[in-house]
Image (cartoon, rainbow, N blue to C red):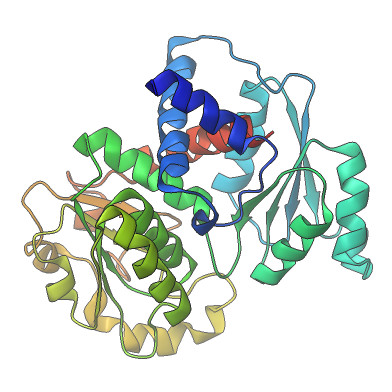
Amino acid sequence: MTQTLLNEELALNLKGRDFLALVDYTPEEVRYLIDLAIELKRKQKAGEVYHPLLGKTLGMIFEKSSTRTRVSFEVGMYQLGGQALFLSKNDLQIGRGEPIADTAQVLSRYLDGIMIRTFAHRTIIELARAATVPVINGLTDTNHPCQALCDYQTILEHKGRLEGLKLAYIGDGNNMVHSLLMGAAKLGVNISVATPAGYEPDEEIVQLSKQHAKETGAQIYLTQDPKEAIADADVVYTDVWASMGFEQEQQDREKAFASFQVNEALAKYAKSDYLFMHCLPAHRGEEVSEGVIDGKHSIIFDQAENRLHAQKAIMAATM
């Protein structure tokens, strides 16, 4: 089977699908979305008009605020020929107690796709079950698949490959690391995660990632030693210590994570040409030093830009 036919098959298989978590997609489908994101980025940079979503509308439900998610989805829909509607919880009847299922069925009559950025993952599951149009996960407390997809796109652009690379994640075992773990498993990336005791990623997601990693040969390793995790890493990744919704734990987390800052001393254990990544927003002087995040190894703004292109790929493929 030729690569062209394979891509056509994948494209047909993705049409109308929800994008809730990377576990729902095969390794071939995940890589297809990354390759599509790179192609859409090339078209945009070259000034080529590409409007596969002409006349279509994306509804964007925000129960959590965001800079990158809102702007990238809204601009992405515009560049694909469609339009996006910003819908805060105060704009919708769900803010007054309407069942998610009712909201999903009504919005499905008006829209061609729904993106939601919310707290509980069960909310997006319920929304997707009731909706008859594709639902895209803009972020939940459990998963952040759009960010992980753009992260692996960015690594591929800088390193030229994904298979066999080592990604070290240092910090909180949050929604970001959950999606990075599954992305690594799907793409053949070796991932080493260092978290303080009590802040490990969800064990069920870890085990599920290890099961999927058997298909690609990816190695998944968890530790409480940042130096062990970062040793010989090609990519070093961190996130805020207190994600949105956990701000009340800030002081306790600062104590627990004190030895987990990604700084120049820790980064010396990585490869000399390592890449530094952060999904932003960042707290300089907390989870990462200024010297690292603003230094020559940092690709955080390439990463942020690729939210636009990765999400365009998701929307173009599913909508």
